[in-house]
Length: 282
Image (cartoon, rainbow, N blue to C red; front, side, top):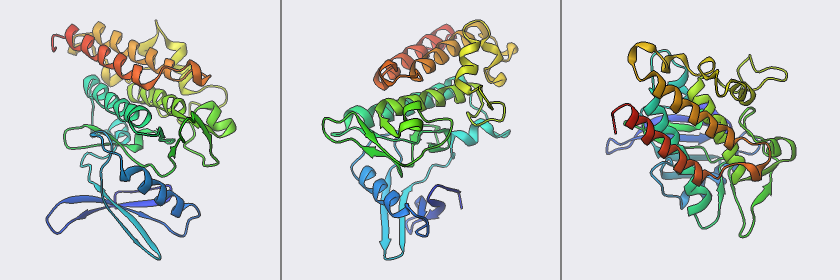
């Protein structure tokens, strides 16, 4: 057993040829499980990208539904952020969030019809043996019809990551994914879940980060990333400031004001290049 979430349980398995796989079994007792399985099959059947989890096969009979997926040996980004046994440095985190942005760019702009993931979060970003990020779990995703930029849904995603228009009116679009991505960026570099107990009442992760920029950024950054002894302290702070400013552009209240994910990919690659150059690692 690797984990339980939503409508399914995920197991680690081995095929006859020795290939390790993840088997996602859908709990057919739960209302919505059939729909979730069908949606994942529909979306993943024709999607091909290095930063999306690959489907190997599916299994179906009258009372059983499962997907056989590529196995990700390093688990989820969530595991790496919050476990005391694992650590990702700035460059590794930056590479992973760029991987996720590339996956979203493919879903939004390179597939014949735009695909909205609808539930982007750190537990849905899986890492392979080289820590390359793969977006997973398309159980509540939406495929927009031709000429359609927004659609309505009654399926609720994870609190803390969802865009205002999604939470209030059930409206999803590629820009609602961008909002979730901005929250994921903040979480990755602050090591704070949007559902953390400190974000009760009026305070939330976005406002907490926004209030710290630009002069008080070290207050919110994951302290493990900013140890003085390692050197390059100023370069690190500048890099992290630019990333969090990017995250705020992703999480504007109004969808039309949010940066597009394509522009986010370009900006993050530029930040990465600038950071590596300033640290003498270009």
